[in-house]
Image (cartoon, rainbow, N blue to C red; front, side):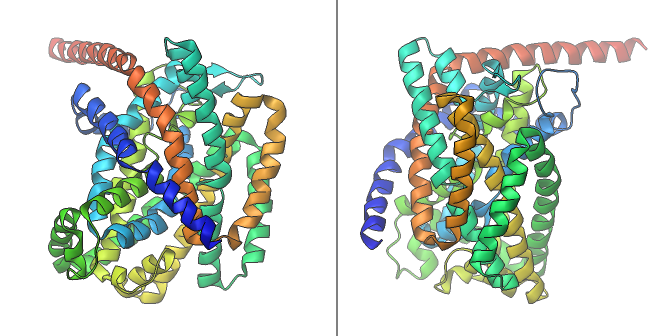
Length: 463
């Protein structure tokens, strides 16, 4: 296992090297500038559109349900365990690079959601199918290249679902949390997850969306409120914590008294890779869910989609990171959920409650990620092999869930990073190639939007 872990670490270093980081940040920066800081200027509108009712429009679920399905796959172990591992690997400055990747990633996520609606189509069952597979194949002028990239994305998407975010990382984290908080053996956790996930995923996107729209908002608000309480009781330390984050983003060893050889590149890579692991901007997963939304506006769905990155990283990941840094639990030599648990235990006014908040939150977040990624993998395997491959895929997915509690934490996160990175490459190439579509659709929508606003103002004045 040690040899395999070393090999995977070397592959991970190669995948998450400078080229991918530059491609991720460069794509986000391009869309940020080309669209005129849309993720900043149009964020209020995006939140307003989140709750817009369009039951008469084409699609399978509401925009809010599509967002919750996407959030169900992003708000998971990356927000609790991933932030902790990022700070261990890159110091508190990794949180700063998470913010940078999230801000730029919002523009990327907007573009993904927009293209998902433009190029979606109905499958054999009459349900909407979309995502990078479809906008790569249908959108690229070079059809041969488009098909190759689409199939590569789908293969890596299945890999992420089966070997990365979808199974091992979530199940192992759930197992640890259940054992730490409720003293439940990993075997029992595995059996319970196999039965529950199997029941929910049989119902398809509508059942997954129904479960997600209840669990995700409730747990997100509860978790953010809990960390807010820690910050309120430690309000005097907030300025120093923020200063430490900014300082160690560029001189990481300063956070450890200069005794740890963490470089700026390590802080950057840890923050960006864990940020992408958490919010999935640029990976191409969220547009698979966005394609199912009931809407006839690709721009509006793009705006709704980008709120997912804001909620996931700017809100939830920041809260976790602040709790860890304020309580200095990253200096105690523990890893993963244990670090976040200690942070809540030491920082929460009533320590025992803090332990339950972290681990129960982790249970729910990781569980919704499993069911969300089951759907993503299903759509990827359907694209590759058709309807006949869905049942074998689901059986394999459930089997791997049963194995998850017994996997090494370092091993599963390294494996997840590798398949995530591989999945990002074809999707980012597609986004860059289709940049004109994104710009033209956005320009046309907001020209019409301004005209409607002006007409409304004239009508009010005339009255």
